[in-house]
Structures are given as C-alpha cells and as structure tokens.
Amino acid sequence: MKSMKKSKKLITAMIAVVAAAALIVSACLLMTGTVAGDPSTSNTAPRYGRINDQKFVGVSVGYYFGGALDDQGRVWVYGTNGSGQLGNGTSISTTTGQGYAGAMQPVPNLPPIKQFSAGESYGMALDYDGDLWAWGYNCEFQVGNFKLGGNVAQRLPIKLDRAAYGIPKLEKVDAGVFHSVALDENGEVWCWGLNNAGQLGNNKPDLGVSYKNDAPGKALFPAGVKIVDIQAGRDNTIALDDQGNVWAWGRNSYAECANGKLTFVKVPTKINFPAGTVIAQISFSQEWGMALDTAGNAWQWGRCWGQTGYGTIKYLTAPQLVEFDATARIQAPTKGLERAKIVYDNTYEYPGAAKVIGGHRTSYVIDLNGKIWTLGDNEFYGFGVVTDYYAADYCRLPVWSKKAIQTPTITGNGDQDIYGKQLNWLHPQVSGSATDPTTHLEYKVYFKRDFPNGFWNETGLGIDPDYAEVPMPYAVDIATFTSNYVVLDADGNLWQWSYDSIGTICWGTESMNDVLPSHAKWKDSGLWDLFNYEPTLMRGAGINKIKTKTPEVTDLYMYPNASAVRGNGIAGATVTLLSDKVPNGAITGTVAANGTFLFATMGYGLAAGDVITITQYDASYDLPSEGVSLNVVI
Image (tube, rainbow, N blue to C red; front, side, top):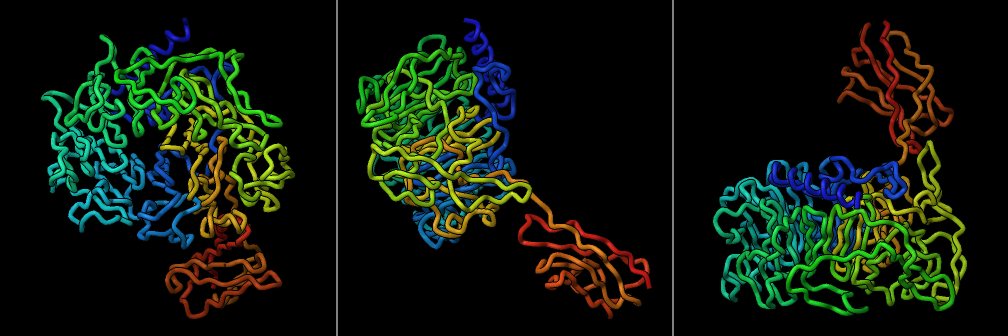
C-alpha cells in the first residue's frame, strides 16, 4: 500500500536522526521538523494555528496535577498542591490559598528548561546545562533529598548536585510514581527512589537499606549497551538502546517486563521482539508498554485492558502487534437511554503510525496524518466521546476495543464538563436539568473575544465556537496518567479531557488574570471539583489575544525654563515622565478627570537639548504606550 511505504520511509528517517543525535524527544522532533502527512489532503488532521497564550512544546501529567513546557523554557503547572506539586514553596496554592491551583502557574526559581516530566505527585525539569531540578511528593525519595534533609516533600525545586554523585551531564529525565530515572550524555541510566520491586535496576530489591535510595545509582546494563531513551512506569522502568532494543526491569506482576514470566526483574533485561524488529520509540505509563518499530508497526505488552470485553484485562507476557480497525468509529448517544457504541462505517484509511503512547485503561497511537487512535476500555473516559446529549455514563459504557480505532475525532463543546453537579462556572447558559440524563441541554452563550481590546465577554462561559465541535487538531503528543489526558497539537496548543478533579480542569494562566471573569480568575477559587469528558481546548493554557497598547498622550507643552510639563491623556490613566535627570529616572502621576496632567520639573536641572519621554497606561489596555518624546528648550 503506497501510504504504508511512505510511513516506513518516515519512521526510518526518524530512527536515523535519533541514532545520530543520541537522544531526541520524539514530540519535539515532530514539532520542529517536517510535520508528517500531506497537509493538502483532506485526510490530514487540521491545524488551527496558535491559540494558547503560550506556545507549548512539551506536556506531561500526573495524578490530579500536570504541566507543560513552553517555547521560552518555562514550566507551567496546575492542579492539586498538597505535597508541593506546584513547586511554589507551599503545600497550598499561593494564589488560591487552597490546596490546588485552578489554573496554570509558572514554577519559580528555575533556569530555562528543555524538558519537563510529571510524576504521580511530583515534577522534574532538565535545564540546558544538563542539570536536574525536582519538587513535590518525596516520601520514597523519588524527588531525592540530595542532602537536603530526608524524604520530606520538597515544595521548591531542588537541584541535583551531579558532581557529588559523579553524574555526567543529563540528556533526559522521567518521573514515575515512586521512583525516578535519568539518562546521561554517555548513554547510562541513573535511578533513585522506591526499590521494592527492582525498579532501580541495581539487583537489590530487598527490604534493607536498598529498599529506598535517596541518591542516584546506575542501573546495571551489560557492558557496551548505550541507552537513548528511558520511561518510568509505576514500579518498573523501560529503556531503548541505540541498536533499537528495548530493556525492562522492576515489577513484573502484570507482565511489564514482557519476559514470559510474572516475577520481579532486578536488572535491565532485554525484551525479545521478533527477529529483525528495530524499535524507534517507546512509551510506558503504569503497567501498559508500547513501542513503535522502524517499519511503522505498533507493539504492546503488559497489563492491557479491553482485550476481550469491557473491564477485562489480559497480561501480554511478550510483545504483540497492535491491530487497527479503520472502519470503526464511536457513535455517541443522542436521546433517551442510548449508549455510546462502536459502528463500522468509517472510510478513513489508516496511514501508519508516527508515535505510540502507553496509558492505564486506554493507550494511543498518533498516525502519520496527525490523527489519534485509541484502544482499551472507556472506564475512565479515555476514548473522548463527544455528544450534545448530557448522559455522562452513557458516553462511557460499554465502549471498549481490542483494536485501535480512530477516536477522538472531534472536539467537545463543553456540555459534558460536569458529573452530577450544578451547571455553574464551567458552563454557558443552558436549559435542561443536570440531574435528568434524558434532558437535552442547549447552549445560549459562548466565550466571546472582543478584539482589538482582547477581552472576553463575561455574560457567559463556554467553549469558543471556533474550536468547539470541530475536527481534532494535528496531534504530536498525548500525555496521560490514569484518567487524565492532554493532547499537544502541532501549533503548541493543549486539548484536555479528564475523569479527575482537584485542578485537572483549569482556567487561565498568570498572564490572563486581567481578562478572565472574576469568578474564574486563577488567583481565586479555580475549578477544582469539576470534570471534563470531552476533548476541549485547555482553558488553563489561556487564549492568544491581541496585545493592545494604551494611546499616546497628546499636546505636550513645556513651560519656560523647564519648570513644568503638561499634556492631555485618558482620565484616570497613569502617566510617567522618563529622564535621567529625575530621581530614579522616572516620576509618575495620574491624568485628572478633565483629561489633563501636569509634571512640575523645576529643580531637576533639565537643560537645553535634554529629552524627556511621557508614557501612559490605562487598565483597559494590555500594555503602556511607547511614549512621546519632547526636546527641552530653555
């Protein structure tokens, strides 16, 4: 098939780049290189351009918390903060005063970051100097005490002293549940944290001193093995070497190590794929492993859900090819007591895989056209069923599929954003009953962007219609943990759905504080107790609004002998006089109610030829004016 030949060439090119560069994060590779698929064809997922306030280049989520990395090297986090997951120095949000943040906040005290990883309840960030920073829950030393006082929660980022442990420059880090993994520039793997099942790969999973390791130690690979990628699961770890082999170690109760057994594995052990298989990319979340080979095939092993029915589990003790059903699609309920179901009338042709993502109850494949395929069961809404009909459980049950099917295919409009709760902030104006699943809910108001000022209409809250009930955008990565799902698209936007609460659904970023309705401001309550079953543009990433400047002041006039300066502006606006002759370089004032202002400048020593500049800022605009300059004439 012609499209499959194209996919094989692309994957082969990808593995060649990985081998040459030693390590490239696959999501970043897809975003910075040529996007797979022909954008001129209708089969390619659409791109909507940059929508979020920040352009994100990486995303990672944990349990009740998550975050993303923007193109400026800043890490933004959101969600619960009971163990310092937000990295802001407290066990509660410094902006909400509560144990969560309903919006994204930048992690303080970090240098420019090139990679971010969220563990279950902690975060890790790798900077451009190869140094590791970590914060959050630390009971098992997964953050590492790094000689800073035991296994207490680290509420601010702490830096790994590489020199103290003899660790070279790091190339990648990955946060698990209770243990952490790092890859150095020499292709060696370092692990620390809980070691109750051998997940540190040091051949010492006993209950003595090695039960928890507060200091990084090397995983024990055979001589000559060079690792290019790492993934931390719940109690196990996998790695990819430069020859395309996959290694696994740790808990194997659910076949996570795919060695034909269900017993712990104390040291890295090679997973046996069929002869000639070369793996290009790996993914692991909790107990379900996924791999992509250079021929474009997707593989799976471990604790795999939905293999024989809804809620069923099969332990795959050896890698198994993922099957795809291009004819299948989700038919959402529309009335009465209908339930979501799979129908077989889809005409989209599967073009081959670009990336695989291992999950909990659902795992994912992103194809060469940027479209998402899902397999497993829908217990935690991982299939992302979209419907206008309010019947949350009817969208969840009894959807399952052993084969990967194309879903989600469209974005939601927000009417599945609650779970038996009142229709409040998260919703626009609606008619119908939240407690009666047979009642259809109708939208009346959406968000409205009022350009050029860039403010949102506060008369109603909902999903911008430009991005509601439209085809899912071109995906380059998916972050998932248990029942939290975030898609990163090719333009740096985030799209999220979730079965969790406690901050996993959030509103705006710090930069949006002035444009959000008062009850949705990130410094207030946040949306900590609401759910979202449909993939929607992630509110926590903000909206890329036009930045408008305050108009300039007018009619500047300097009094004789430079004794005063007057002018006209916006009543109530702040005006600033800038000059190296005035104290601290600036003096400020306020425009009077009649629209005039006056600066007394006698005694500042202004002389002929000096230049002063007057800027103006009014709160109804985003930015101050650039300023009007005036030459001093004596």
